Length: 161
Image (cartoon, rainbow, N blue to C red; front, side):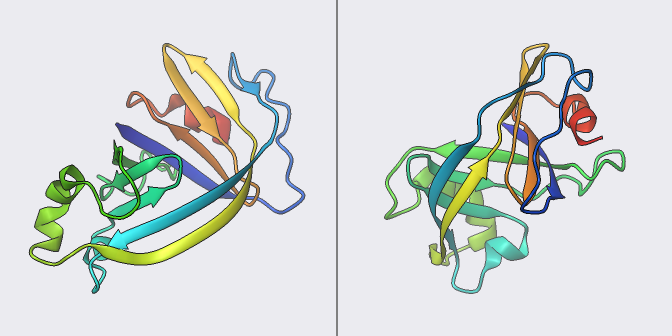
């Protein structure tokens, strides 16, 4: 899956504005409080991070591998586009399939836990259905707009403006 993401700074008093007329079909869902437990894995000398790659396990979600972005921005929009792969599995050891994808980065080094994050996130979800694509977003201090399906950044660009 290709993820396109734009992160914007937002203060603690931020509330989503009315989106009527900004994007046809935009629906703002009720806020949700998320408690996330995330463990990032890398080599002891952080080879994945140096290449812009991340491998994490998040409770309730499984494993996520984000590969280095193809480019930092798309058309000056500030959108980050990169491949995201997901794998099922427990938290103790990265799946072999994920390890195989990053083998060129890690070579013979082992993947070990390098960071543990406990986060409480208030998420305001924006759903936009356009030509079969869905955009989701929301965080209290870093508003996130992300397209998970397709390669057209149109939805993200219109929501960010």
